[in-house]
Image 1 (spheres, rainbow, N blue to C red):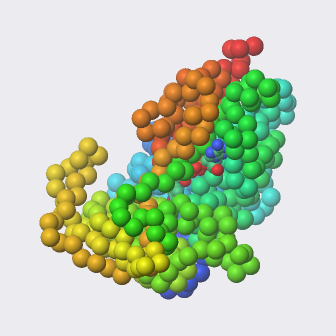
Image 2 (cartoon, protein in one colour; image 1 turned 180 degrees about the vertical axis):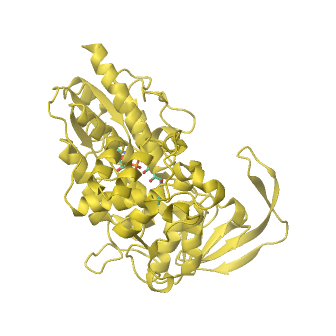
Length: 464
Ligand SMILES: Cc1cc2nc3c(=O)[nH]c(=O)nc-3n(C[C@H](O)[C@H](O)[C@H](O)COP(=O)(O)OP(=O)(O)OC[C@H]3O[C@@H](n4cnc5c(N)ncnc54)[C@H](O)[C@@H]3O)c2cc1C
């Protein structure tokens, strides 16, 4: 019966009115009965397109086959051959454009809920103390990984499974990259989920050295020539926020989304037992329409504000995932579409009092294929607000490229690296994730970390 169902087994979620006032996880996931029922919908296609749709090529039909049988441990071991972070990917991957987007079931009805099944299996494994399998023999080669985000964790985990002695150097006091400082608790619990998957990577033998800023505490050249590392992977992300360059942007009460989210997620400003200051006023305007803007808006809402998303195109062009926009609307975020700020208004003490905004219309498509927003002359108006959060994108921090001899970057300050192997212009130095592509996704960063682990392994073997 379940196999013929055109629609997926629905997933339980917190009620929108309740969750708008707390930071607990929105999606509650499947229980074992629901997971087995949803797994029955998989057709186990001979030419399974879902596998190619996954940037780390998880054998999806095989793990779902084990869920069907109720052997969740076997399902976990299949997933962990390809992914070090399944509980994270099951929660935050854009499955609708990847594995699920390729699912044959989606032609007539709903695709199989692959992401929710992955999440279920990973949560079950964690709750039952199941760990990924570590390498039995060490090969004695030392590799350094810079950054403990998804690209660094994946590269480190894969190298450790091959027997390498791997140390991750992380600038912050906690490992996880954007997974700990960017994505909010209500989408991705930090202690229960992220730190547990970081622990799994450590259980493979990976060491994590926090509070070390490569380029300041020590350079890549020193790691290679003085500290005995034979190769380095750079997974330092793209954490430098962009601003609009409009008047008033330096005022008190204007934040980058990165800073606002870091204070809240990494430094727990939302919790009463932490004294991290955060200035979230009564009316908050978030400028931008991507996933980061949705996270900042939904965080400000939970801190008690009325929240407006100010976006210069229409709803059809919103770059955020449809699910995030849907959740934001359900919770009461107001979307001021086809509007763009011209100035942030401030009082005599330099506090934000509002924004001068102009209305926009859509013109011809630009290079990205999206219709270009064009200002409507004479349509300016003012809105009141006391906090502005700029969420306009990020770029890689130039600290590493400017302190590493012979490392090429492009004009967007992204490190130039080979797509297949992660090799950069400097011998023994590999790179991947947002540091190479600019801001992208968790799973693409993981795919790049995997490719670089293979590239480093080849490099070390050929050097011997
Ligand atoms: C708010 C937000 C929400 C997002 N939501 C999603 C989502 O729902 N789904 C999705 O797929 N993607 C999402 N993304 C994007 C995704 O998180 C990133 O693409 C991904 O984390 C990139 O991984 P990375 O390993 O390249 O870098 P990062 O995760 O950025 O990790 C880089 C790490 O390197 C460290 N580092 C930087 N410089 C140095 C240095 N000099 N020395 C030592 N350490 C250093 C940083 O502190 C950081 O820990 C989101 C991003 C943000 C900001």
